[in-house]
Amino acid sequence: MPEIISTSTIDLPYKINQSELKKFARKVFSSSFKDIDRLLESFDNARIDTRNLCVPLDYFFSNITFQERNALYIDLALKYSVEAIEMCLNKAGVEKKEITDLIFISTTGIAAPSIDALIINEMKLDLNINRTPIWGLGCAGGVAGIAKANIAAKANPKAIVMLVAVELCSLTFIRNDLSKSNLIATGLFSDGISAVLIKGDEAEVDYRSVLSLSIIDSRSKIYYDSLDVMGWDILDSGFKVVFSKDIPSIVNKNVKDDVVQFLDKHDLQIKDIKNFITHPGGIKVIDAYVDALNICPELLNNTRSILKQYGNMSSTTVIYVLNKFIDEGINEGYGLMTSLGPGFSNEMALLNFKS
Image 1 (cartoon, rainbow, N blue to C red):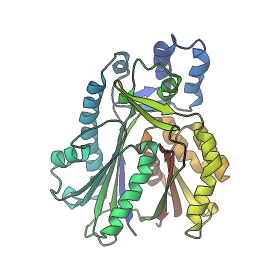
Image 2: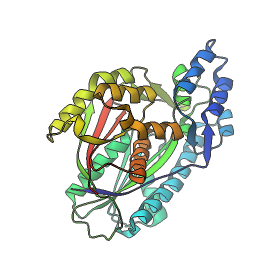
Image 3: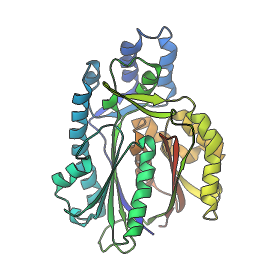
Image 4: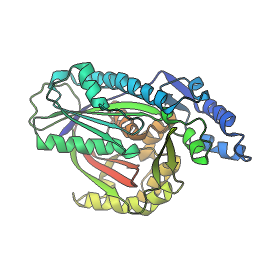
């Protein structure tokens, strides 16, 4: 089975306190809502202390055009992707020339040529590298990317796959969008960049790793008639957030059956999962996972910790959670990666860790 041999995450230069972002939101949105104090309670209830941002807070006080924000997205996505890849390679002791596949995940900016092409040129990667840019999966992209890397490594057992996820959610902020959904998103989303290195069974590469983290299987589930739950409305001014309050109820209604059916395929039960590597969509979503799966709340401590320290970084966040497990102690046995995203969709990956 393909194995994850290294992960990396980026701490961005602007770590902003949630209290500062609450003050910012008051200045921007107070003229539009008579009950602004009540709405701003969502910033406190989010259980977030700090947020990972790629630009200083002052940047958002100006009406910066979509073109300008997207140009900055391209520059920063390239810069931090290279940094994450180099960190991931160094941790594993793998040379960049050995990468056979590059998968790039993002939903917060657009580029053609795609960012993976820019990375290949910047790093002078193999000219014949297999590249797969994937756009539009939102928060589901991290687990979906692991699934796609697994498929690539099974198709070519000699593969060395580099997965990169970049989400610069802050650059999608539209200054003159004074909607409630934008206010709520302003209290939750932030920026993140992560990388994962996956090797096939027959990959001829020397690497250093304490990991033996196999990818066993994955499953994607999309729910009919839920296209308006999460995503973007594409406007002249940029990406206008679509973010439904119904997400926790969807988790409560559907996730347990999805997980049970997925695990049953491998003769496993929820009680067999030792590591829940769950994307923190928000504190209510985390609580909904606990209730739906009937698991001990402490099993999602790493998920809560990443939310508290970084906020919701869309697709990259679940890899930050995985990285925390790897750095601070992953339990021997099975791990379940889960994330939800536009579609509305549920992505799952089954892992197995052996010390």
